[in-house]
Length: 462
Image 1: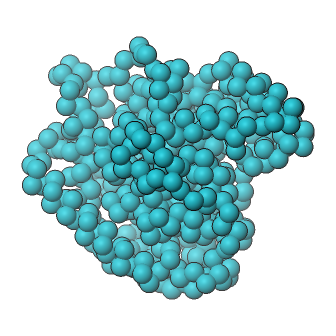
Image 2: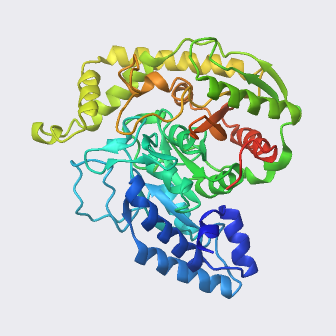
Image 3: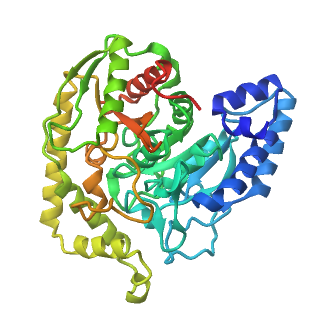
């Protein structure tokens, strides 16, 4: 029973609770046992609170026994990336500069919504320091490893969350994505990840990286992500930039892709070198969309790589983030973070505004592109997982993580919804992801496209 429960989606768990096949206590114990067995090999957790989780599960079990569950996720084990506040324990953000002493009395909006729907909190998951890079290792918590091959990276910055879902430590996890940080580790670990339209999920405290950063679900499939998105979306006065009331995405999930106009860009117009295994798997996924009734054509969004604008905004945010730290505290930072802080501090206000201009121009270009296409499909990443503990693959000509993530960070600049769906593995058994990008506010369309891939058998559920 233990192994089976850790393989179930949130929806399957809820259906099992309703039938009385098993209880939230059974599911929570199974997840905790899984963590105990696998955690020494992957290092996905900052903190596990078994006592709290079991108390929440027991309360949920009583509600189910009485036929009165409360909320859409009553009794579902979940995890939370350690950049998001969760009351009752410290949010350390992967940094030795953060003090553990509290009080820690506030939930982030997305965490509060999970709590209101009676999810069971297993623990907090690892992140690189302040979420600054596309892999997950930090001076405070060490290296997080890929569950398919512990010698490889899990990706980042929501690496711990991706590993938790992939290894069965909770069906759902909350991640954040400022340049691919949900999609990168989801792709490397073989799970589903969604970066919603910016503002769809309220964020508080605001990210030091500003309006690049999104909160999103990391799950076993698209249907679980739709359920989770409906829970964590909505109003919160603490986020001045949130989009306000949101319509449900679950209701339209099964509408499929028939008649949708899909642009397939295998390499962003030849700008990106994609590993052959990745290209083949993504092409097969695109074919499945066509077979499901989508109108597919190869088309590129026709933009030059906006990495310099992204670096200006990202590095400036990092410099502002640590501005309050003294020299001794800065010596405690990840050396790579110190490098981008120094670069960010050299930018002028005019440099920053020029990057904002470039961002707005890219947004307009993508807005025009989506007048012709409902979805853009690309590889999530051009490569599969490389060696753990490195920011870039061995032999890479790039110094920073943005060099191998050209398909992800541009859509943080444009604030568009984007998802990654596992669509195969390479010869080493390492997962490959296909990315679906929609126009702003079209989260439901992205999820419909993803669900169509699961329905077609391109990606295995749960």
